[in-house]
Image (cartoon, rainbow, N blue to C red):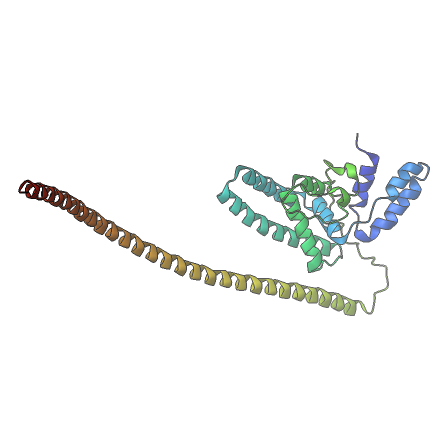
Length: 295
C-alpha cells in the first residue's frame, strides 16, 4: 500500500512552483487532527528551481526521461564490461542527450511561466547526468520528488537522501501531469485598453529572452570551436613529433643493423687473430726447444 505521504507529495511536487507552499500549508490544516502526519506534511520542503524543473520534466515528458535513464544504464554496463569503443560512443550520446533534454525542460518551465537561467539549466543537466551515471540518482529522478539538484562524480554512489522530499521515495514513480490549458477569455469582461501594449511588452520580453538564449548558444559554440581548433593544432603537433620519432627509430634500427654486421665481421677477424696467435706461440715454443738442444 502506498504511503499517504507519498501520494500527497506526488500531488504537491506536481504543482506550479509558486503554488507549492500555500497548497502544502492548506494540507497541513486539513490533516491537523493527526498531528504526527500533519508534521510530516509540514516538513515537505519547497523544491529548488532546478529540482522543480526536473520534477516537471518527469511528469510532463516521462518518455524522454526514460530514454535518458536507458542510455545511462547502457553506459554503466559498458563501464562494467570495459567496452572502450561503446563507452566512448555512449558518453558522446549522453552529453548530447542531456543537453537536448535540458533544453526541453527549459521549454516546459517556460510554458509554466517560469524563466530558467543558464545557471539553473546547468544544475538540471548535472542532475540528469547524475541519473545516468548512478542508479540511485536515477531512481530519485524518476520519483519526481526532488527538492535539490543532484551531482555525481562516477566514483561511489551518489548521495540522494537529502535531495528527496520523502526518504521512502526510492522506487516511487511520479504520476504524469498534462499541461494546464490556457484559461478561456471571459467575453463579458470590459476590453482592456492597454491590452495591445501589454501583449507587445510580453512579446518583447519573449524576444529578449530568446535573444539572450541565442547569444548564450553562440558563446557556447564559439568556445567549442576554439577548443576544437586548439585540439586540432595540438593533434598536428603531436603527429609531427610522432613522425619525427618514427624517423629517428628507423634510422637507429638501420644503424643497429649496420653495427651488427660490422660486429660480426670484427668477431671473425678476432677469431682469425686468435688462431694466428696460437700458431705463432706454438712455433715459438718449438724454436726455443731447438735452441735449448743446441746448448
